[in-house]
Length: 442
Image (cartoon, rainbow, N blue to C red; front, top):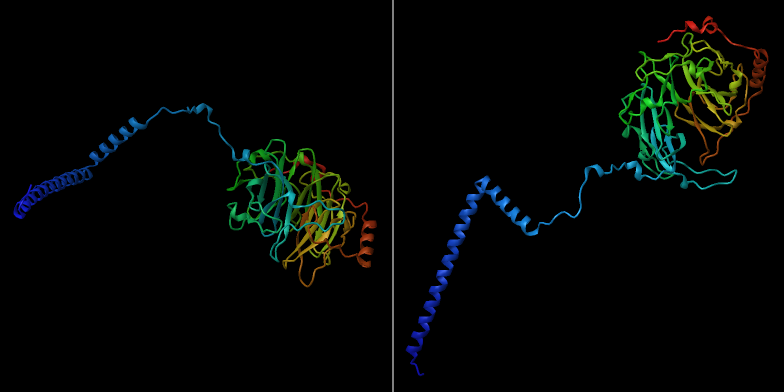
C-alpha cells in the first residue's frame, strides 16, 4: 500500500492515543488500589482487635500449611535433674589460703614429684606483706567449712573455689562469702560430708566450749548461719573436727593446759551458748584447742618468740571446767603464750608478728621439753615487735624453712632447773576438779 505522509501520520497518531489512554487508566487503577490498601492498613493499626485478628488468621494459615506432628514426646515423669556437681570430675586439689584472705585451688599435677632434699614448689605469688597461712589437700567434691570470730559458719565446695596456677594470687574470701565488717576467719576445715558422726568442737576467748554435729551446718553456704551464741565481749578463738572418741586439749595465754575427753561436752544445737571448758583466773584467756593424737606433739610459742614442743602424754585427763595443769612457765623475758597447736615432726610453721613479718621455722628443730619449761628462742624479735600467731604448713614451699636459734647457755640452765625442780609438778587442782558434778552448765 502506498500512503501519503499525512495518512501514515494519522494512523500512527491513532495508535499512540489509544495506547496512552490504556496506560493512563492502568496507572489510575493502581493508584486507587494503593489508596484502598492505605486506608485499610490505617484502620487496622488504629484498632487493636483487628491487628490481633490478622495475626491469628496468618498464624493459622502458617500452621495449616507447614504444621506437622511432633516427632518426640515430652514425659514429665522422665525429666532428669542434672546436678552441676555430677559434671565435675572428682580429683584431688591443693587448696591454698593466704593470711590476707586470698583463696585458690591448684591441681596436684602442677607439682612434680621431687627427690629428698628438693626445695619444693612455690604455691603463690603474693604481695610482700602476705603469706600462705593454710594449705591442705581436698577432693573437688569435698566441702570447706569456715568458722568466724563472730560465731558463724560458712561452707563452699572445693570445685567452686577459683582454680589458679602455682603463681596466681587467687580470689578474696570476702567476694565469696557475705562477711560482716569486723568478722574474721578463725578456723577452716575440709569435710567429705555433713554427718551425725563428726562434730565441730569450738572454743571461745572466755573459755566456753561447744560441740555440734557437722550435719547441723549443711545449709550454711555463703550467707552463713549461727554456729555458737557468744556472750558480750567474747569471740570465737578456734574450731576443730572431732570424732567423739578423742581427748581435747585447751591452752590459755598464761600457760595453763587442760586435757579432757570430748564426750564430756554433750552435743548441742547451733543456737546454744555452750558450756564452760576451762576455769580461767584473773585476766587469763583461752588461745587454742586441739584434739589429742598420738602421732602429734603440742607446739607452744610465746609473744617474745620463745617456744617448745611438749608431748600430750605429759598431761593427765581432768574434769571439764577445771583450772587445768601448768603447760608453760612464762616470765617477763618470754611474755605470755600466743599460740598452741598440734604439729607433726615434719611440719613447718610461720610465725606472724605485730609488725607484719612472717618468720618461718621447721617444727623438727624445736626442742621437746616438759610442762614446766619455758622453751628456747625459736623466733628472734627486733625492737618492740612481738609474735601474734603461728600458722602450720603441712608441707614445704619453695623457700627453705629457717632453723630456730640454738638456745643460749642461760636458757638451757634455767630450762633444766625448771624441769628438775618441777618434774613432779602437778597441777593446780581446784575443788571443782575433785567433783565434776557441780560444774556449771550454761
